[in-house]
Image 1 (cartoon, rainbow, N blue to C red):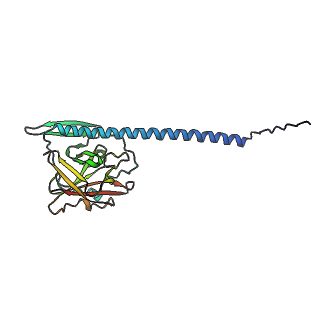
Image 2: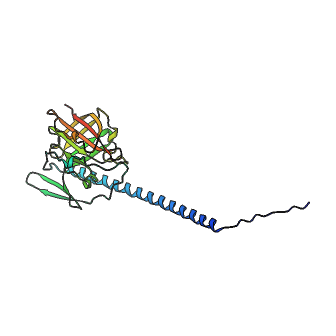
Image 3: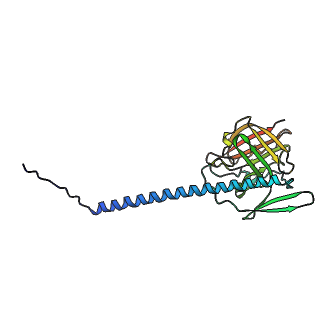
Length: 251
């Protein structure tokens, strides 16, 4: 019995050729985007590591200097009544500002100031620590987007560890640096603040944590009934709100 083999021919139509080219183009675009995003992530992590290096270098410098003279602004900086720490949780930081060190010697003190490449001048007036969360950063004397990339900043209030409400702002990074772990803090946790001028260390106990709108600056009130308090502030909810942590001196 004879068998008849039937071969089906596949006809390549112009429409099929067009679809094949389109699929190839889409594949190459997906590969390119994946490589680009991965490279961007690596670069962002590198920038954050460099930011950590700068803040740690400042801490090392403080340890070498016996006293640091700094002009402390005890007035409240309104800044259009907005808490300016608006970096979204998932936003990548820009390139880290270049910082140069300027040391000015006086008769009895040694003043250490820093200048960024963009011309911003600042000093370090305190060191804030939350041991349980691994937070250990110098508090820069001024607040700006540029300085927030270097370390946490004083927002407003009196001199460190004096009567009043000492307010500190910092970015909330996904890699848990700066105030990236501040949301994990709980009542009773200890915040230690060291005055960079006198080297006095005071421990504060957390008693409140809540969120506010960026325009709500009531957490910076200086009405503390004669007590020493500290307030830590960072962004939350993708930069739409502010997380506020309040603590008072342990006597």
